[in-house]
Amino acid sequence: MNSNNEIYQRTSVDIHNQKRSSKSLFGLILSDLLGHQKISLLLLVLIIISAGAVLVITQQVRKQLFEREQLLLEQDVLESEWRNLVIEENVLADPKRVENKATNQLGMSYVTPQNETVIVIKSK
Image 1: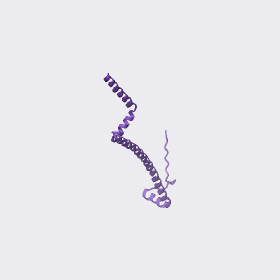
Image 2: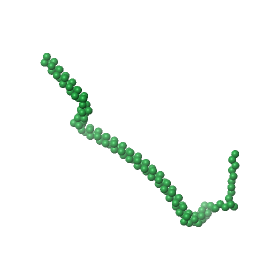
Image 3: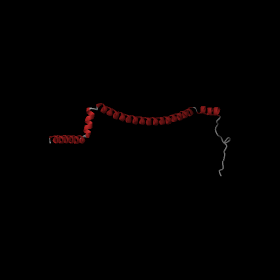
Image 4: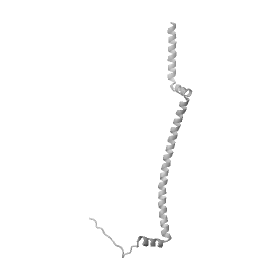
């Protein structure tokens, strides 16, 4: 009878411990991590931090690449405008020099009624 009573007590203690363990499984895992697995917990935290840093840096790089592309496009437009202004400045500063250069080097001349030729193309 004494042995039956002892078995009953052990069984009830085991059941009580299982219920207690299953109620706070998260608490048990957390206490195990904090108590015995400090290095694993530290590595987990470092992995999460590094993953967040990768996301932030990737976003910054994409933003900077987009801004660089916009600036290069703006630079192209400004260079084109600058070239046009330089040409206009040269023409306005000395139109005779530009005219002489066009006539002498390139063989260009003004169109007059005598040297004008009109070509008419009839369509079907």
